[in-house]
Image (cartoon, rainbow, N blue to C red):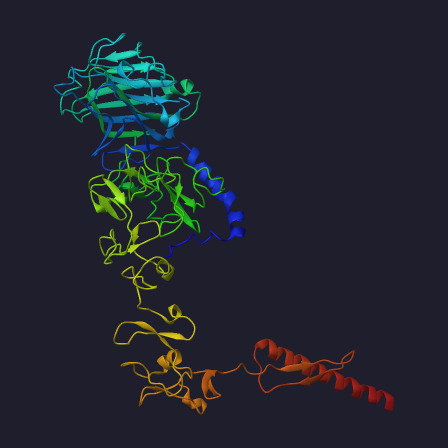
Length: 592
């Protein structure tokens, strides 16, 4: 079975010409910060996050720490935000403390930082809440939801702002009127930063209605703190001798107040990020790997590694491969090499433990149909099938309807391609390697079969018989006297395809030799050596110019093939007339 290879893969000349342009466009897309949106709304996929420590997907929520002692985790969004932009954050969090949790601890924090570890940043457990301690995240600005009293804390239920991983010093603090670590009760936090006046505001509520007035305010110059460089944001959490389960249910962030979390393309109308909704990320962008309709380049792909998806000239190498057209974002490092989504950059190419170059982490073990890591709950989450025990997508090993142990499960995506994905075939080359029912692609059903649809599929000396009675199939071209197969009826069009002589007899449906041109039923054909063939081109006019001066002789054929030929005849005749006139004039002069 072969899969669709990117058309420029084997063209070194075009690669050399396009690579600098692709690289420039990709680099621009990865560094621009005109707009960054995050819309994590739960679900089985985890787009653009890096999980560290105990952090993992927990069904449809992002779990920072489980309800166990001495746990430590962080979940960092991999695209960065501009340090000089306004920032608008909305969080739905849940801290659950069981009866045996020792009263609950230690809390979780939302952290903005420029730590050299980037998205892998993680502090210490216990009272450091995952951002402080000896391995503290710095430089940073943290909004902590602290549920245990340690040194420097006002109480065991406060929200505080700290800097550079210093959990002992709060530049601002607020005690909400509800208990944050209540079983099964989520709460909401909004964080707004206005760059013009360096004002950070925090709003807290037990319902989804944002309070009219901030409960916590402080002045922090984020651009100055981060050296005017783009920064990361994410979550940390920890437990110690006491414990709680810390979860993120919803995380919306933007560097503009006009954040749009989309569910369909119509939600993206007029959005500056693009008009295509990525229904996994819930963010508007220019494309998805399966929707390149808005991409204008000749061979497009989609890079899903940024906060919003961008059109790229189809990638030709994985991230850090050294290829000038390699994927540019570490959060979408895998360049899909073949198939209908070839040339796009996605987040993974294998499940956790698969040994794939870009396998998923243990906390989000399944490489899903979206191109992101996560969990699967059904086959619909995968390009093939979902193992309900491990919650991981499994590659197919055979077409739908075959006896393979993990055949494609439905006729909507019946072909198992070389990457273990179920999809429809789009061309015959999809059917020529691997195990399929036949070498021909039915582009309507997407199934590979032995049934041809046109003569070109059958090769030299063959034709595609669509009236064979036992399925459409390739037949040998017939010689004189051979009958047309099955119930096939002689027609001029069929004779051209099925008979070597290109002529057949309707009375007995046999291929026949021609005797005269009138035996050939197709206009422009003549009978040559008992076979109907295209009439030869008429002879071109012949002109010969000899001698110097106006010496000229014309051999004009009976046909002219073009207006240029007509002009040549006229020119030659004019020269002959001029020569004759000159000779007569010379004769008169001599006579005198």
